[in-house]
Length: 405
Ligand code: SAH
Ligand code: SF4
Image (cartoon, rainbow, N blue to C red):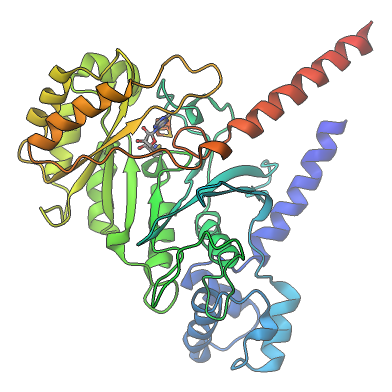
């Protein structure tokens, strides 16, 4: 009975939200909304441009702020639509300025009860990077990644992906006239944007949600709106070969590939998708990636796992493997999570590995873990909430057992 009630409320919420939310909408969705309000066809494209400017350039959260749109139309918009973003459940700020938001998405369809995802902001002196999620959970089960262990998986919608950027810009005072948070941890300077870079390295495999990711990128890079540069957007994939070329052709963003191993036997274990798309095919797709050049290199991510993939011989193999690919190498210290089966390589091992890669001519920054105090690093997303969930489930099971007695 309780289950049925939850479903009924989910249906009505889904129907309601599907038609009302305009923050995160594409141009054609805005046009459709205007058509439904009776705006004449000849007037629509002008009105779409106006709405676009207010929603994405100015970050308007109320229709009443849209001064150049006629009052009667604003009244109709306000009656049927809203500019709400996903709900911010918690905000955590690390001592190093990293911020992590837990966001609750409204139900996306009739059988969805809503979903929670995390989104992380990492400030540096010359840039601010927002790490966005593309899915709730992930179906790919890489053995070192906590996201892959989450039971619930669904794709995020375009609006939910764009919503993460809108929330970050709201919170960081990054829209015109906005005020940065008073803690002084957000980079500022002449012409500098708080969110200057986006990486699809949060939860999920972005190329398994290609359509929504592509449409979100189109919104983020639209010159009349959020206006982010394609060169400052990086999509990270575990190697979904057929979609890699499409990404280059249809989105033109930077590409990052999660390699993590230099031979198929090991990569099969770490990144199970390798059984479908082995290393040779992934590298072939990289060689053919539209726009890749020495000035626009592909990033190869390599997580440092103690005693698993971190020997000098593997560093040399990595260099050999990437010959002829315009590449950058990112060595990522493994971030442990509760119950994880691996340990992070020792610092000296990482340094030795990095030196071999560096001597072969690759810049090989070791990605310093950021936001450790708030569990904001790669592969740790959602851990706290999941733990709470697990605890709540155990409590529920216990109460059921008690009830049966
Ligand atoms: N699914 C995509 C993007 C999200 S994961 C992908 O796999 O590329 C972003 C990066 O974090 C990937 O390189 C991933 O391999 C890495 N990662 C996942 N779990 C990690 C962990 N526990 N420690 C360090 N890096 C991790
Ligand atoms: Fe999914 Fe990427 Fe995690 Fe693998 S590393 S389980 S592809 S999110």
